[in-house]
Image (cartoon, rainbow, N blue to C red; front, top):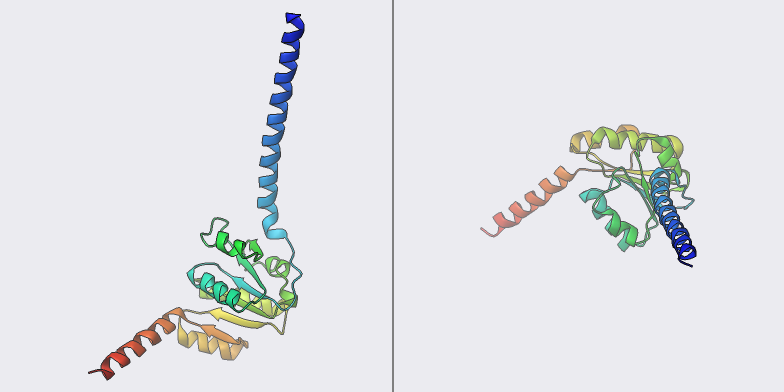
Amino acid sequence: MTQYFRMALMLVTYAYVIIALTFIIDQVVKRRTDILMLGRRRYYNRGHVIVCGLGRVGYAIVRELIIKSEDIVVIESDPDNRYLPDVRSHKIPVLIGDSTLPHYLIDSGIGRAKALICAIDSDLTNLEIGLNARAENANIRLLLRISDQSTAEEMKKRLNIHFVFSKSYATAQVIYDSVKKAISFL
C-alpha cells in the first residue's frame, strides 16, 4: 500500500510542477508577446487626434483633449513613462514606439486622423514626424512643438504647418504679462 501511495504522491508532485511551470512559461511568453506587439497594433479610428510624446507637455495636451471629449491615440517611445497608467485608465490607445518611423504613424491611423500634435522635446524630431504625417495624409492639421518662436513661425509659413507652439515663448509671454500687471499696480 505504501508503495502505491509513494507512486501517487510522486505523480501528483510531477503534475503540480508541470502545471506550475506551464503557468510561468505562459506568463513569460504572454509578456514578451505583449512587448513585441505593443507597437504593431493598428487603430482604425476616424477623425481622431494623434499625440506624439507623453512628457509633461504631451500629457497636459492629452488631459485637455480628454476634457474636450476628443478621440485620441498616443504614440510614446518609453514603455515605462510615468503618465501611461493615467492615460490608459481613460481607455486611450497607446502605441509604444518611435513616432519618427512612418509605420507607427500608419498604425495609429494617420490616414484617417484629423490632427497630429507633436510634443516631443526635439524640434527636429517634431518636424520629421510632421513631415512624415503630411506625406501620409495631405489634409492633416499639424501642431508642432518648436522651442524657438522665430523658427516656429518660419516653419509655419514655409511648410504649411497649421500651428506651432513654443513652451519658452508661452512662458515668456506669461512672465511678460505678469510683469506688466505688476508694473500697472505701481
